Image 1: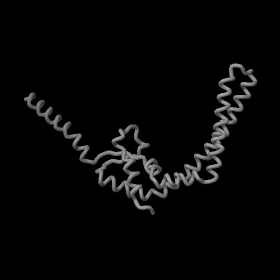
Image 2: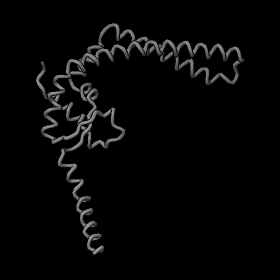
Image 3: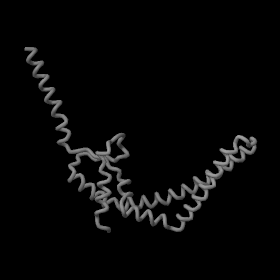
Image 4: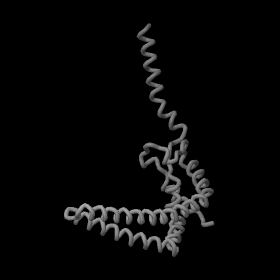
Length: 176
């Protein structure tokens, strides 16, 4: 009798184990999306960012950044080459000069990043309704049962990502 109960229990457990993956797929598939990346990679977003980069203020900051970067790299190279023969006072002065140049470089980098981030935020807000429309369509057509934001996922193989599909669909929508 115990043998029959044990055998029935094993069969029931095996059946349950084999049906669990099927039950999970019955709910729909799982996907991840990076909405910010999907939006910023659209043709429209690239044109808007290019427009920001073509503004006079941005160009001036970029030219200043390039000049400061070149000066910093030269100072660093000279310091690395000559450090062994410099006196302690010369080394301190050279380090202070490097720190000052690096500080200037970080300031200009911050200005450039702020300009691009502001444009990015405007794009995200502007395109949000279109993104929602595209996501609803993809969820339906792809049979997605669970859609996660990429930033909140620890690991997902590339096959789970629909970011490129969202970008493609956004590019296909007529301009508003």
